Amino acid sequence: MQGNLPQQETTMSFKNKRAHISDKIVPIVLFMCAALSVLTTIGIVYTLFSETFSFFKTVNISEFLFGTKWSPLIEPKSFGILPLLGGTLMVTVIACLVAIPIGLASAIYLSEYAPTRVRKIVKPVLEVLAGIPTIVYGYFALSFVTPLIKSIFPDVGVFNALSAGLVVGIMIIPMVSSLSEDAMMAVPRSLRHGAYALGATRFEVALKIVVPAAFSGIVSSAVLAFSRAIGETMIVTVAAGATPQLTLNPLESIQTMTAYIVQVSMGDTPHGSIEYGTIFAVGMTLFVITFLLNIVAQWVARRFREEY
Amino acid sequence: MSTATALKTLIDIRDLDLYYGTYHALKKVSMTIPEKAVTAFIGPSGCGKSTLLRTLNRMNDMIIGTRIEGKVEIAGTDIYSNEVDVETLRKKVGMVFQQPNPFPKSIYDNIAYGPRLHGTRSKSQLDEIVEQSLKQAVLWDEVKDYLKRSAFSLSGGQQQRLCIARALAVNPDILLMDEATSALDPISTLKIEELVQELKHRYTIVMVTHNMHQAARVSDQTVFFLNGEVVEFDNTETLFSNPSDKRTEDYITGRFG
Ligand SMILES: Nc1ncnc2c1ncn2[C@@H]1O[C@H](COP(=O)(O)OP(=O)(O)O)[C@@H](O)[C@H]1O
Ligand SMILES: [Mg+2]
Image 1 (cartoon, chains in turn cyan, red):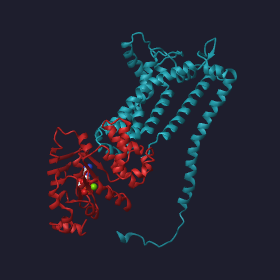
Image 2 (cartoon, chains in turn red, brown):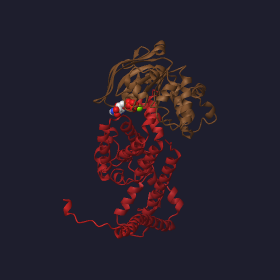
Image 3 (cartoon, protein in one colour):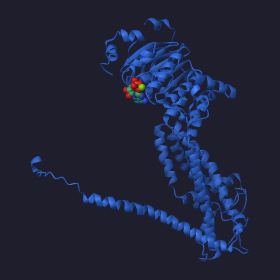
Image 4 (cartoon, protein in one colour):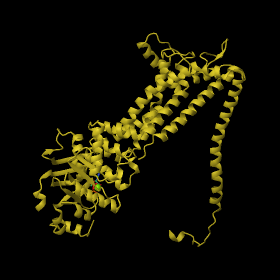
């Protein structure tokens, strides 16, 4: 074998043209990929701002923010966003009431109680749940949850905030559970051992050591869940209805901001009209809320970070 | 075994076998541990010192696949019998770990954690416990003005004494220390060794150490382990000056380990 090899010449070359060029090109390509997403974001925000700006040339901004009636498509037109905001908040609050306790409980179970074997099965299943298209959840709400609610409250309509809220909640459970569990698994075992050695039960270790130590991660997961619920579109479009109204009754049909945007986008509203402008104004409102929530999440994560 | 037998026995281990799955980690271990004295476990790494220590507060229960045969009696009670409440046992048998592991809380809350867990609510009572525990761990003078500060603001040696204070706060009878000084600098180590000398008047102390000199300095009784077996246990002075087993002699004279 060795005899077949050509005699190796001893050369001392330190130039490697290939590596040299790729070292210059690769960062440029990578930078352009990063720049692309930044530019896209800037483009989106620019469109949103300019369309919103021209909308507020016609509609008074305080009427928009504080008006309690939303009927931009029917005369007499009115542009008060509160009904849409109220609908969105109702669905979001219901969703969070479902998702945060259940998600947190399942995270505690997975990180503190479940044998490795169970965790290895349950985690991927939860992640698959997170991958189900939201339209499927929408029809699940309409064809399963709503009839279930109807069997308890016979007066409930086909479209209602409760059904949509519950299902949005179910949809975001995996997110809350997965992010909270990651935060809890990151708590060092030595802290748990310290507490067990003092005579703490499993539940006490989970509640008084692990949850406080993972608190910033848990709160960020809750805030993310909240903003995910606010932005959810398909489920509410299918199951919550298209009746913008200010109500506190979750059994009534409402309309969320996202569902309104869908409604107008799907219709034949002329480009540049005032009706068309509303979707940007509503979109802007959504954007601002989500943006503020992200800031809150980051602040919370920093404020409550327990170092270990 | 002159002084060792003269002291009252608190812990009695008889024919103890422990398996991690199929791995036989402790083999027919028998020994007695005297009350209000320091007992040191020595032996090369992996010989089962920590494992035996963890059988005393049943921390091994949490390792899946652990099986145990034989008897461990503390003050006459078989701690593996069904009537024993593990949480109460662990309250009575405190433990300090190799790496200081303070909770990410204030100094005060670290100490108060255990008493609160076991039902102490009154602020004045907690204040009293915190002060007493820190004093016993010879940390009070260093931290009394900073009780609200994070435990992480302390040095490694202070953190370890904090962990000792935390264990003392639930009023244990026995204190287990698993190489509690191996992560510390020589001065902090010395402080903890002095502390152990103080504490043995009130507590029964069982310590694992990889450091023979430490065992010789601070313990009253020493147990030498090899491959999951107890080779020899005796009064520390006797074990180091006149070991009865050849393997003990080889180990303490540094021929292996
Ligand atoms: N959780 C565990 N699972 C399986 N084997 C273990 C576990 N902990 C320790 N062992 C094994 O048991 C033996 C004794 O370990 P240990 O008690 O930690 O020794 P020491 O403290 O004397 O260094 C070692 O061989 C180690 O690999
Ligand atoms: Mg060890």
